[in-house]
Amino acid sequence: MPFKKKKRLPPSFYEWQERYSLAKSAEQKIEALSGMLSSIPHSDEFNKVRTHVSKRLGDLRKSIARKREHALKIKKARGVKFNEKLPTIGLLGPPNSGKSYLVNYYCGTNYASTNMPFETKNPAFGVVPYMDIKLQFVEIPSDLEPRYVQLLHKVDLILITGEQERFKALLRKHNINIKSIAVSKPPSLSELWRWLSLIRVYPKGDQSPVILKSGATVKDYLLNIHSSWVKRFKTAFITGPSAKFPNQPVNLNHVLMDGDVIDVKLS
Ligand SMILES: Nc1nc2c(ncn2[C@@H]2O[C@H](COP(=O)(O)OP(=O)(O)OP(=O)(O)O)[C@@H](O)[C@H]2O)c(=O)[nH]1
Ligand SMILES: [Mg+2]
Image 1 (cartoon, rainbow, N blue to C red):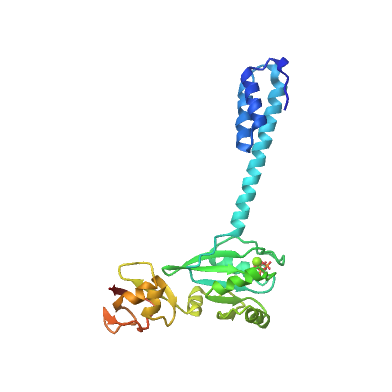
Image 2: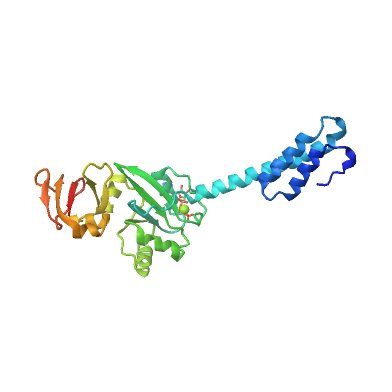
């Protein structure tokens, strides 16, 4: 943006102009242009240069705002990241079968869910609170890219929205042995929880449960926390549905139930 010195602009203007030409980031450019603008004397003689610099500054600010909005949209579209610790329900099915609809329905997310097929390009994640835990949903994009289908190895339940047989065959092909259920309308959260076949076990004095597969034993509980705990195990006291009485002492093979409170004694 060359402005000739003959217009008698103050030296600070040219200093800012020099910084503008060296600026690498948009923020540096904005700073330099603002500096140029504030260096222009308030006189009609400089109206043209003032208009020119203001326009450049305005355009740059708009372009930054557009870029930020775009980045935000992408972030939003990607949704929350996969949390491997949460009970997770995978959604699998043909295009336009309502996978995104279900994620939005349960999680209040805002994924595109229209009649356009193959609308979801990346796995869409969502989380919904249920009882004192959270359930996670993940939509597998309809183009069934293998790296996304592989995500289903990490889920606890698969809902198939559409032709069951084709998708059951796909799961077999990928050696995915997770329980799958075909749905034609949104099941309730309590129904999903039942299908998940999981239990919540509370370490004594802790409000947040450890989530285990139904049928898990005290040993499974310990392994879930730290493998060294199995060797160090002395006894555990259970209060809750699996105990005959409060603080029942049990061994490693004791089968836990949803809602148990466990107090482990280690050596
Ligand atoms: N009301 C209602 N609309 C549904 C249901 N399932 C699907 N739809 C509608 O069907 C259309 C397609 O649903 P999507 O959620 O985009 O389907 P999808 O399986 O995610 O499809 P792609 O990601 O595009 O492959 C949308 O207009 C949804 O609103 C449902 O159970 N109830
Ligand atoms: Mg979708």
